[in-house]
Image (cartoon, rainbow over all chains, first blue to last red; front, side):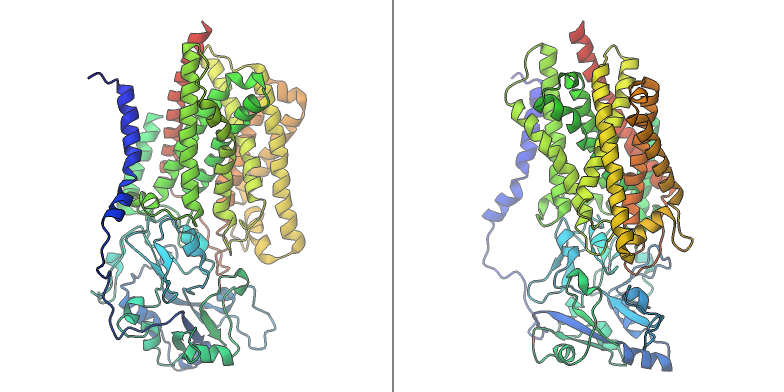
Length: 263
Length: 367
């Protein structure tokens, strides 16, 4: 058979394109009735999980002793590495000053003089999350059943588009291998990350599935963190939000954050 | 060039081993030199349309000789774009996830589609037209619709790339409706400027002459594109400073004056302005525009001023100040620059090979 190098290359090029159809064919052929996962009967369920942060309670406790319980609890449960540079630090929940967490809202003559006061910051689990909109692989997604903005660390390609998209600076990137920097006791029930992927707070989806509240909420001795289903009129968060004046970060952007603040 | 490619590749192996920690990028400035180069080069690729469109739609015959140079420049530029994306990824082995899990709501997904499509179109068109020329026949008829398609497609690659930025809430420097227009205007200045410089090189080193008229026409296009480009930058400055909204002013203040002593990009941005003005003066005056020596200076000034504005300032300043209104600056590291240089060298290597093919065909048919 006579095949010129050229026509061989052409044919193999077309074949390579054809390979792209393969996974779809596989999907059609391999349908099954088996359930994909088994649910824990104790799992907490909600339509849209939300959090209310009462900073007054937090500050009150801080007057007695410096407290980082929520940060420590979260970072222990999720094997969050402790990298000491501003450039590469990984954080799921942390504190920053009022004027940084709520930029543009500080006022020199503020009655409450909030400038310089620490505020807790974490992922807002937006109802309308820009990070999910921009992700090219659906590695970050909003879970339909309970509104948690989640990440698949094994699908993320590390393009960091979500970091550009997030207006709250809630996302961290593993610039280096994080494993040597995990200073807390390793939690074998939660995966450690590899170098090259993005990570952030997941509202403790893995704990909710076992019927536990998020680690930060559970650890807070001041009771400053409340967690619940915003869609449920009887939930603790819904009651607070409908009876108190609360703030959300950058509401003008239309992302509809699900973390509320009381000051 | 091979040496630079080698150095770039070695630096990339170093990055592949250590991770993106070897770059200057951070939690706050999460895209840096790589993505800025990518953005600039998409413009250079799109600008091929500035020779293809007049030739095929307006029958501007003088461009007939250089359309192939424009198309091959586009191929080399898109190659560099794709390489810059790959070197920027934290998990390059998972690149194909973009195809395995197609996500139409992501602009990056569409950017991948249009860039690869554009590469494919230009390869197909360039190759077939050149082959036909060599055989002394008219190119096959099925190529014609592809040529027409490549015109809006070129516009699309830079529009979609602008949408990568212009659709993000909370990044105020990028959140502007004229982003795509700005991108196209600066592309149509920098791309043809590079093409003119390349044409002079081709003329010097081969027997193929792209033609004085073609270069003259191109230089007019650059003049208009440059004027429009600077006008657009002026529009941004007006909106920001007359409205007085802090978030709109901050990135521009950072770029041109620095904020609280943070101003690493200030000298580069003033250099951009000076080069842009030099380019405009030389381009608007018909005497200096038509003289080869001054035209070369004008093209160099155009290319580098646009590179500073888009391939440096635009992407980086979008991240400064960060979402917490903190000033965290960025500078690329040596290995980062080496990798970038390696990608540029690879692009120019591809370009040299393609131009060699094109010019030898042109020489052959001329004799």
